Image (cartoon, rainbow, N blue to C red; front, top):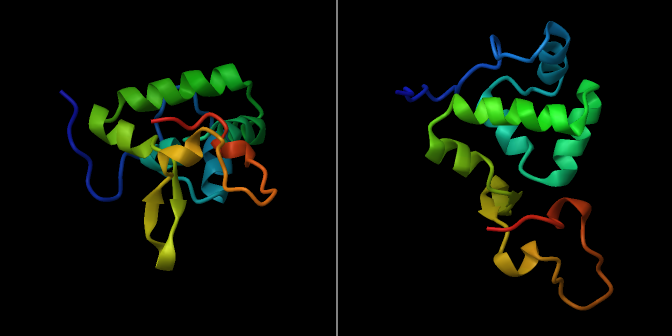
Length: 120
C-alpha cells in the first residue's frame, strides 16, 4: 500500500529512468518532487518542453510520468495533473471548462498552446 508523503512530497531521487543529469536539470528548475513534476506536466505543451529540456523523446517522458504516477496515491496524482492557472495574489484556480476546449471570448484572442487539449 502506498503511504502518504509529508508536505515536502515524494523526492525524485531514486526514481527509475532518471539519470543524475536529469535530476540536476530538474533541480535547476526547482523541481524536486514527483508531485511538482506531475503538476508541471499537466499540459501537452509543458510535457513537450520538459521532454526536450531533458533530451528525451515525448514517448519516453510519458513513460517516466506513468512511473511517477505509480509512486503516488491515485487522488494525489489526479490532483497534480489537473491544469490550473494563477489567480489573484497567487491563488491557484482551475481552468474553467469553457476555456479548456479552446473557446475564448471574442476580441481576436487566440488559443494558447498549453490549453489545447486540457479537458476534465
